[in-house]
Every structure is written in C-alpha cells, then in structure tokens.
Image (cartoon, rainbow, N blue to C red; front, side):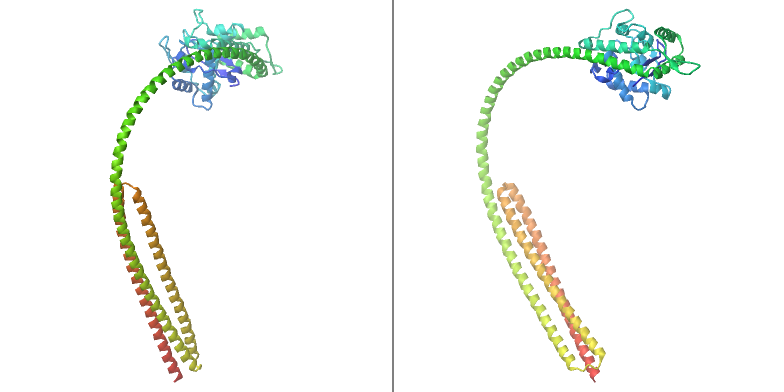
Length: 498
C-alpha cells in the first residue's frame, strides 16, 4: 500500500480519489475493533471480514488489506450510526435502500482498491470525496471529515476514553490527505515530452474541475500525479512521521498518568478484597474443624472394621499357602521322578550308541585285516575298500553329532524345568501378598497352567522318547546296512582272489 487509485461508483455521492497512505498507519495499532464493529452495525469480525473479502475479491494480500482497513477505522473513531452499506454493499440501514457492492469488475480495479480513501458520513451514508478532504485547510481537515450534515460532531460513548489520541491521528491523516491533494500535478510538454509541475493555484483549479469531470479523466490525472510526485510524497511522509512521534510521546505520558490512577484504584479494591478473604477464611476454618471431627469418628469405626476383615483375610491366606505348599511339593516330586526317567533313558541311549560304535569299529578292523591280508592285484577291490573306510568315518561322525544333539536337548529341558520352578516360587510370593479372592483366582489359574504345562511336558517326553527310539533304530539300520555292505565286500574280495 505505497499508494493507489480508489475507484468508486454508484449512487449517493461516490467519488474517485488518489490516496498515499501516511507512515503512521504502519507504526502502531490501537485495538478498538469491538467498538468499531458496534458502530458499523457489523456485530462480528467474521462478517466484516467476509464483506471486505467480497468487496476486494479473492486475490492474495486481501487479509492484510482488511487488517489495515481496521487500523484506519480505529484512528478515525467511526460514529455508532455509520452505515457500512456504501462500502460493503447490502441494505442502507438509515434509508432502507439497496446499496451496490464495491467489488471491482477487473483485475486492475481490484489491485487499486484502497478502502482508506473514504471517510463515512454518518447521517446519509455517503462517502466524502477527495475534494471535501483537500478543500479545507490543514488545521480544519479533521473537523470537516468528522462533522455531520447538521454541523454536530459525532459522539460515540464507547470511544470516549480514546478521544485524545485518536483525534490527533485524525488531524495527521487529514493533513496527509490535504497535502497529497495540493501537490502539483504533472503535465506533459507537447514539444519536449517532460512532465512539469503546476503552481498552487493551478492545483486548486484542477481539484474544482475534477469534481465535475468524468471518471476516466481523473484516473489519468491521478496516475500522472503518482509518477511525477513520488519523491515529494516520500519527503512529506518523513516529516509527518517525525511530528507523529512527538505527539505519540505526549500521548504516552497521558496514558501513563491514566494507568497510575487506575493502579491506585485497583490497590484500594485489592485491600477491600483481602479483608473479605480473611473473614471468609475464618469461617472456612470453623467449618473445617467440624468436618475433621466428623471424619475422625468415621475413620475410627472404619479402622475396626478393616482390622476384622484383615484377620479373616490372613486366615484364608494361611490356609491357601499350606495348600499351595503341598501342591508345590507334589509337583517337585513329579519333576524329580521325570528327571530320573530322563537320565535313565539318556544313559540307555548313550550305551546303545557306544555299543553300536564299538561293533562298527570291530567290524571295520576285521575288514581292514581281511583287506590287508588279501592281495592288491585288483584295483577295483582296493578302491572299494577306500570307499568303505570313508563311509565308516562319516557314519561315526554322524553318530557323534546325533549324540551331541541329544545331550543339548536334555540340557535345554533341564534349564526349562529350573525356570519353571523359579516362576512357581515367584508366583507363590505374589500370591502371599494378594487378597483371598485374588489368591483363589490365581491358584485356580496356576493349577490350570500347571496341568497344561504337565501335559505339554508329557507330550514332549513322549515325543523325545519316540524320536530317540526312531534315531536308535535308524542307527541300527545304518549299522546293519554297513555290516551287509562289508559282508558283500568280503565276498567280492574272495571271488576276486579265486
């Protein structure tokens, strides 16, 4: 918003105006939006934002434009009877007539819209033109922008507290508008083509002429003003900002005085509230002592009842612990018996494997002796003997691997039994610390788990026994096959010798 062309149209005194925003609009914010929306007859900020968005269209940056428009209205202290239908469209609340919306018809108009250019007249809903702003002197521009048609200054009760600061902003903004309107307009020299500045008298004549001229001619003049006087407007803005800073300091001093007065008033209120709090505190203490006496009597009766319940729970716990100890002892006996059976089966399997290995070794030695005693005339027989040796070594290694695997399985089963015993001990400790109902429930669950685990262990034992018997039978079958192969080899050797 470094400047732009405000293009308004419709009935009720619309006008075209070129506005250069003063820098103080961006400097600080005085939040008076609730009072502003009350004055604008727009009850919520959501409706105002929607109306403003409808006016500008859906282009980027319109949210920023809405916030800047609210800031501008805060400085102007709009009267409570202001009719916003002339800006946003809708129904004129004063006359009851329909008012057209200011939504731009082209992209150029949408980009040029600046709602800060108009001050709303609160009686008939018309927008004051640029001429009404610039025709007055610098000192009287604020009164011209805020007076009604009957000459009375609008008085808005919700905004009385902000009268000092906002009136000064009105004067500064009106001075900026008047200074902008009085800037010399550039005109193009037909011979050279260079823009030249006009005098003060020619500017006033052009302003009076612009009120009756068409909208197209004024748009051309304002665009030439913007290009020719850009640097001059920047210099004027810097001067106005320095003035605004000085006035802002004075306003801050006044605001600090108001704040100190409010603080003193608040201190008196705080002292009064502290006295009330002390009185209420004493009454609460009396009520608290009564409640404590009642709670103490109820607590003593509750302790007697809880002690009796605790005794009954302890008796049930002792009986349940004895029963659990018996069951655990029985389970330990069963585990020991099964471990002894595992050991016996393991020893028998190891003995059978050792016997088979010895028989295989004896048979191999016998074959080796027979082969050594036989002649080495036949190469086929010697190759067959070497193959038999390799097979015998492989078989012995396989037997050793199987024995080691069986040992590892037995060791893992022993570890599983030890872990199960530890879990049972922990479960017993937890059961001792729990209530009777929880103990009974946990015992039932533990019994079911023990039964399931015993069944699983029995199935595992049976499966391991079956696997061991199958492996032993397989070893015997392999040994029988090897013996048969050795016998056939011996017969072939004899035939070869013959």
